Length: 87
Image (cartoon, rainbow, N blue to C red):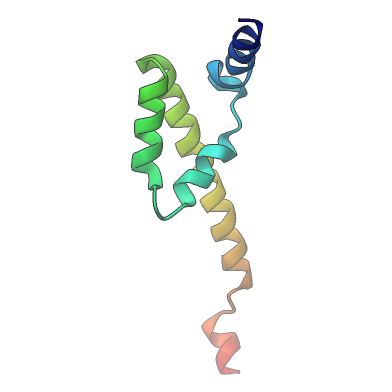
């Protein structure tokens, strides 16, 4: 019983409060070609009530969008202009 109580406390600490969740866990699942966002959305909706699920889904999408914009900006800096290639 004490082990179950300890496990419940850790679950509440790391997973119950959506503001403390490491979003990179969900980002890793989205980037896995087997699962993608469909699975993440299902898992979030399965584990949380609708209010927490909507908030967490938005947080994951914002994180993915921010990561993509950062990656795209790095790539645009590394691509030479056409005029530079022809010179």
